[in-house]
Each structure stands twice: as structure tokens, then as C-alpha cells.
Amino acid sequence: MSDASLSAPLSAPGEAQMGDYWELLKPRVMSLVVFTALVGLAAAPGEVHPFLAFVSVLCIAVGGGASGALNMWWDADIDAVMKRTKGRPVPSGRVTGDEALAIGLALAGFSVMILGLAANWLAAGLLAFTIFFYAVVYTMWLKRRTPQNIVIGGLAGALPPLVGWVAATGSFALAPVLMVLLVFMWTPPHFWALALFVRGDYGLAQVPMLTETHGDRVTRNHILGYAILLVPVSLALGLTPVAGPVYLAASVVLNLLFVGACWRVWRRDRAAAEADRFAAERRVFKLSLLYLFLHFGALLAEASLGTFLGA
Amino acid sequence: MAIKVEHELHERRRGRNLGVALILTALIAIVFGLTVVKVLQLDDIRQFESFDHVANPYADQEEGGTE
Image: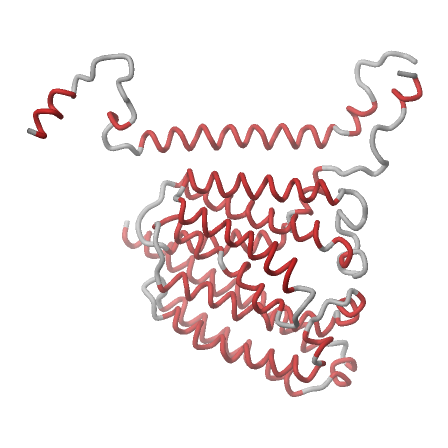
């Protein structure tokens, strides 16, 4: 071995740091997964040991992160084209595709195994299904084929509260299924509002978003339609044992605000939207984040209140 | 070439190495914690003890119970 080989860099300059691997797990998506899974677990009847609850939520979060890494591995080509995603670790070259795949598979395996040991194997199986659904059904199959990609693929992002509930109870119930339905119906208006104001990005990557395949009018119709369909789901959840007056009050106010915002988006066309730089569309996007956060926050408040009053 | 105790590679990969160390430590802590919690949750500690190398003092009671 020569001196030159010893002193030469052993990997490319700008090699990945921990932050790049962390970014691979899509931390912002993971935060939604953690929060909804925590609410599913907290709202479930019965008591779970705090350490087991912590490990269960951690496993669900890591499983979500694994899905993100597998998504980035598969979608590196289209991520490189879109402005919003071209700085991600794989398209920017900081992490190789093989690394992303290995990390995704390893984290998926560990998270499912440890959730099985910490909680139960039904919850572990559901987590495995969630990862499979996001990585294979959504990312590999639907995303590039149909404008309904985010509708069906949204199921993967909707399942964490059910996984949390099953981790606590070992069984299914109506309330967590309605929580899943709430996130499932919320996903389309959330992403289509985003797609309206980052439209060019998806077009460049040839991702068949509804805005690209069917245009603005159809997308606006769909946004309002899903916002209206969300109302009965949200209120039905309010009639289950996990909810109470706090949730119902929050739900009524949030649905009024959200349907109102979507109504304003529905009423106008692209020219009007461009005139004020998509102010109404951006408002729907921001409001959708608040809508989901406060719905689940209210459920968490009810669960905490129940524990406090019951103690 | 001067022999350095710490190669430039070590410096460059310090963050990654610390990260891996942290993840492995967390994994050990989780497995240990799970073991402790699961064992403490057993109602009857005999579920945990299998009496592999000693006489089971409860064996007679169990046999008597089934008769």
C-alpha cells in the first residue's frame, strides 16, 4: 500500500453526515406519524406501561422513517427534477441509493420486530403492512400511474393511530378506524391544495397529479368534495367513547373554517389564484395542517382529561 | 508519511461514528428496558423460571392439582 493510497480520501467529498441520514427518514412526516400514533395509543382503553408505550410509538415512528427512506431510494430520479425535493440526500449525492435502501429495510425490520416484542404481533403486522403500502403500493406502483395516487396512498399515512390503538389493546375498534378515515379523507385536499401552487414541479417530474392530468377546475372540485366528506367522518368520531365536548366543539369550528376555506378555493379559477399568488390555496394548505393537529390534539386532551378525572 | 494516531478519516466521520454509537446504545437500553418491564409484569414468576437445573418445588402441587 502506498502513501498516496493511505492519504487519499476514502470516500467522496461532502459525504453523508448523521443529519443526512436523519433527513432520509422525512422527519416532518414522522412528526405527524408520532403524534397520531400517540393519540391512538393514549385514547385506547386500559393502561399501558409508560415504557412500552414509549417504545411502541418509537417503533411506529421508525417504521414511518423506514418508509420515507425507501421512498427516497425509489424516487431519486423524480426528486432530482423537482425544486422542492432536489436537495434531498439521495438526488444531491450525499447518500447513495444503496445506502437509502439498506437503511430503509433495516429500520423496517427492526421497528416491526421490536413492536411485536414490546406490544403485540397484530400491531407489528399492521406496521409492516403500513410500510409495505407506502413503499410498494404508493411509491412503486401508484405514484407514477394514477392521479388518484395520493388518495389511495394516503392510507399508509392514515394507519398510525390504528397501529397505536392496537399496540395498546391488541384489538380493533370503531374509534381508531374513524381516526384512520379522518386522516385518509384529509390527505387529498391537503396535497391537492399544495399541488395547485407547486404545479410546475410535479409536471416537470411527470408525476400524474390531479392538477396535471385533469386541470385546476377538477382539482378544485375534488378539494371541496373531500372537505365536505370530511365533516361526517369528523363528527362521527365525536360520537365515539374516545371523544367528548372538547373534541366536538373543536370539530364543529374546524370543519366550518375548513369547508369555508375550500369553498373560496372552489369559487375561483387559476387566473384569480395567480393574481394573489395562490393566497386562498396556501390558506387551505396551512389550515389543513391545523385541522388535523387540533382534531388529534382535542382527542389527546379528552384522553388526558379522562385519566385526570378518573384518577 | 507521518504516522498519526487519528487519521483524517476519523475526524471526518466523527459525527457518523457518534451517531452509530448513540443508536446502538439506545437499542441496548430498549431491549434491556423491555426485558425488565416484561419480567416485572409476570403475575407468577414461575412463568419465568423453568427449573432447568433444579427440582421444581411446585411440581407436586401442580400434579396434585390435576388429579
